[in-house]
Length: 167
Image 1 (tube, rainbow, N blue to C red):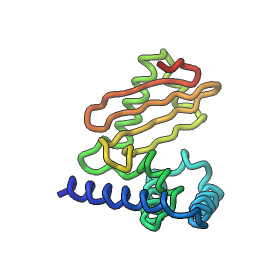
Image 2: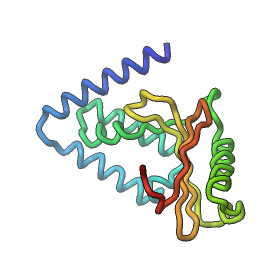
Image 3: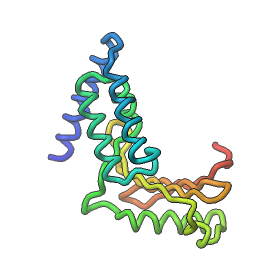
Image 4: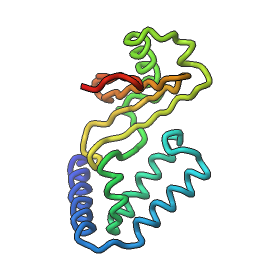
């Protein structure tokens, strides 16, 4: 049943995307961007928002996309934030895995990861919510950011830091 609902949602969003792309530019995009600016004024930079607020933002974008908002469609094509369910890894488990992975790959001292530089977490799916959920954990450490993407169901990790070469 879940898969059927996901596919119906995907079909609805794809239809909305096609409709929006054919429509002329409107004030709708400005409204979404303005709403994001207001929320960032209140909550700070999006990456630092609690999971609940990120999920609420994705729901807002879903509603705007159904109304033909191209900005919302573009944002949803990248990431759809949600809250983990009972079958998903917890935030604490994801943070622990990420910390272990960074220490193993880069030899970073655990104390530096636990410092006051900050940690950001997201739980999301890619491509309009039609992919396996994953966690993204980012540790902000003085002079370097460490990023860990964890596939929820397998624990498979992709770990990199600022300055790593891609490819």
